[in-house]
Image (cartoon, rainbow, N blue to C red; front, side):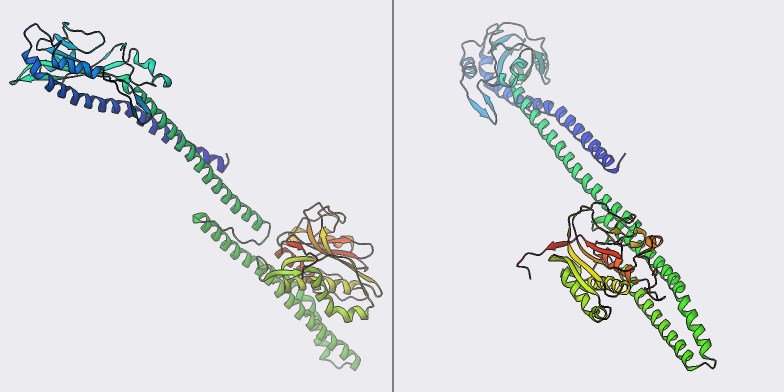
Length: 534
């Protein structure tokens, strides 16, 4: 199971169980709490009515009732009193208390119910019996209130049917005179009278609870997406480092940011150690030949030699020294580039102007070899690049082309934007490109389709590259002999150019031109200048 799905399911279980338990507790406690409040108010009401009924109940003759008394009339007036009160979202249109009074024997002497029970014996009912014994008297009995419709819109919410057979709460209070109980007053109210309030409150609690759950799940999804996105950024960074690309660690907050920095520090240490070992081995191997040549020339110069031989061996010493100096300087430059993650001073640079700048120092050599520079395509393309590094890369390519181009030939140049159709050179091998943006190696021919890229392309008409050398082209210290001599370069020029391309998220690619070689530098971060661009 993937990390994102695990996090989401875990959050869903925690949020869902929490919401379920909370709703069960709240809804389980809500209805009893409402009825407790209702009973508390009925206790106050019963005791108030008991005080009001005391004098007339004390004056009532034995076997008589309270019918026709002033107290009975006031209670009747209460039951028939019109009312229209809006309580928040509910509307109350009737008064719901039923009041009945019993004497000291439990006989009903007054009843405001729709079917008065005057004369009946209620001494067995808990509310009356317990109150006569000096206890708190209350009961809840199912009855069918034929006349009571507690709220005018109860039926709209489906609660009108709840009144049928719903429990009726009875709360009694003693009527005392001179320390003795002379009767009982009972106040009754159907539970359905507050059912609409309970129903509305429960519905709001459900809506609020489900909304809270939805918000919690939304937060869980957001947190999961953030976590998964962050982990994927770290994974992508680790994969790019594994492929040899140099990337800045992703900026993420908290412990994951610390992990990214720790991974970067570990990579720096491992890269530095591996890089040092690789450079030491490569430099040792490449210096063997010039050192051997210097040693041989030095030993010969110690003997008596003709002047011509002495001059030849002295020139060999100077040549090999220059070669070692160039090799060390270029290797240092390459090592510096390999430790960078990107261009240090990026700015907008005109690609064709950079080519003109690189051609200027080669003007004398071009004239000497009678080489002609021909522009096949020249578009106003601007790159976000380090101007010095870009000039160095182009200069290395032009210098190689001049070294291998035969006299009286043409150097074909092009600057423009490739639409990504795939008509281009072959990318150098990723194991040697190392930098960002390098594509995988393909046989000489057409490369795979890519997205649009700005490019600089150079073609010479020299001998080209042997088929056996394609796999090594662009590797460090690999070089072929210049035409007409056995002299080789340092083998670092193309490696430096390749590294510069990688720092700019570009690539260096090659293709046979028959005759000659076609070299292409491609870049993704570019803009096409307008006619008014400076």
